[in-house]
Length: 133
Image 1: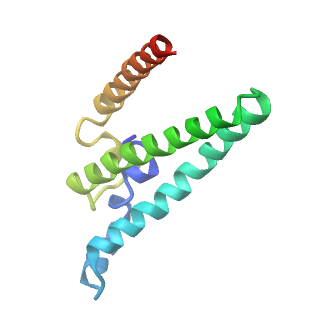
Image 2: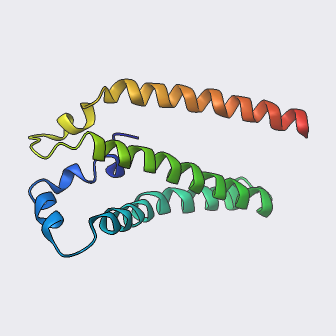
């Protein structure tokens, strides 16, 4: 969410942000590449952990585990893009402590709303999948 590394990545650049914009590289390509690197760093460990737990500890079938892992990756990338874009929109380069970054733009309400929304969406998908099974 907005309290993750990907949700404050551009604001963490501080003084370097303006310097990076002056470099003779495409800034758009830079921020896209930065997103992919941050996503790989932030999402790889939890995804591998969930995959290993599902297969090893919970003894879930391989096909179900693969689709579960693909779902985790897709949802992480989609929410990561939303929060990365939000950081661009609410860019703050003069922050003094990290609470300023995490609290900007009604950050706490956004986190609460996204958690509740995710729970409702998950419940709906669960009910639909049980009905269709």
